[in-house]
Image (tube, rainbow over all chains, first blue to last red; front, side):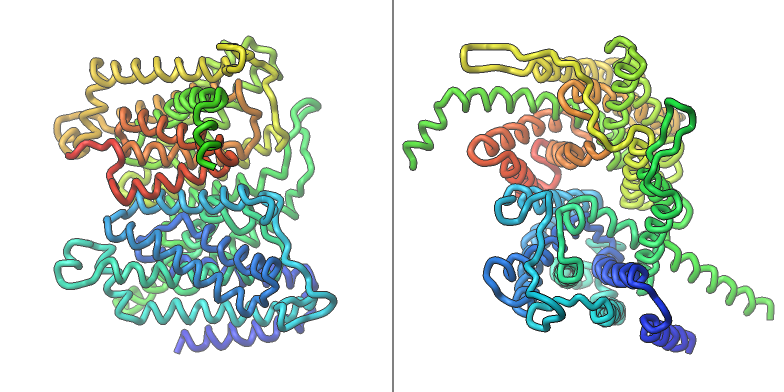
Length: 337
Length: 296
């Protein structure tokens, strides 16, 4: 009952949002939040089971660069490029996931192996700078003026907005499908005790691989969507260790165990970064004549501080904490009666 | 093709590459030492370790260039500052997360990574800063020139390894630190104050980061994001050597530096890094406990 009201309210807000006087900049911000929400949701599909990957920057880069390279170099439409890039990302996830799970690389070790993967992706992009533009970034060629269904490009923000809403909903639906499936019970058992769950017949490697590949494929799609929308990608915006960490943190801030956690995480972290940037500005502030502070770094500082505080005081994230609070209140009111 | 390859192998530049790889290994070894110590004793991954080094580099830069302090004093102050930073990292963040999921500890220090980067940006700006101090290069023969700084780095890290090894195997505190890394619970039962030992270890780990900073600031420009360029490789070295195994980490540092140097010789430097990271991933599958881990 409660859930249905929330979902209906979100649907109404999302469909009305473009028509209530949202300007272009705000629209851009909302689209970015939706795209990143989808990417974060993709990560949490596996992250919630203790499979903490710091390599999702690599999957996102495969999606973004794959689609853009196929379009620019081969002249094939993103309609072909995106599925191919997603397939590549899935294969990459298999290649890295299978040995990891087979040889029981878990916890910190898994995080560090995947971190190496993210770094490999970044170095390859930089090493092939002749084609990919290296650290300077890469731009899919524009098809011309206006919108094109074949090229999946558009000048109209509103088209991307509705596409992003659809993608975001798809992400939540997939998250919920995993949540309601047997995979979830198998993986929860695995994250509690791998030996015991293997002993009762859970196929540890296979179950872990399923979510890993699913997560990687979704993340690649997020990268491709980002590339089509922004029309610019670079190792710093969709690849590398920085993005991998950003993904993990947003999910932790929002709440790793709830379907809306990653979305809330995206909203809070992206809006916070934006508010801090606008509010503090990027100029310099001089305490005395000789001691000047560069305010451009302040958002990063506050962001880092917030993450540390969140992990110490709210390890379940915003949504998790709210759920706990709600449950306690219910329990209290029941015992009071 | 093959003939060219063989010719390239015996070229004077290849020998120079090998020597430079060896020297780079010394620097890597020093980079990984402190992180390895903390891994081994406290069982926590400090993702922000490279950023502590970065802040150390800034401290030395600031004291030497802006305040005009002689380099040696600035270097000592830099080591003291990172040591304090290590102590604070444990006292303010990690000590509250000792019972938390390991991954939460890792993420908390990841938050520190951004915090340190932001702080460096606020205080020092984003420009590349150069110490303006060079030890020059040493001509070994007509064709081979070696960077003096790398030579110094190589010998310093050798000395540090020996000193640290002696400290851990001979001194009372060192033995206590090794004991606690073997069994956390029993040591508490024996009346050892683990809190103090953890803080002490964190301070030493921070100090080692400071030493690395001294040698790095002589070779590279400082900027707030420099940590990202050598952070990942430091983790890989520690993991490949077997987390907490300092001898293993030391050897792994040379394996990595050789891969990077040789890979960079035949192709671009980035391919050297790609090779090293791919090698790391492959090794993890073959020996998940690290290349040089002893069987426990």
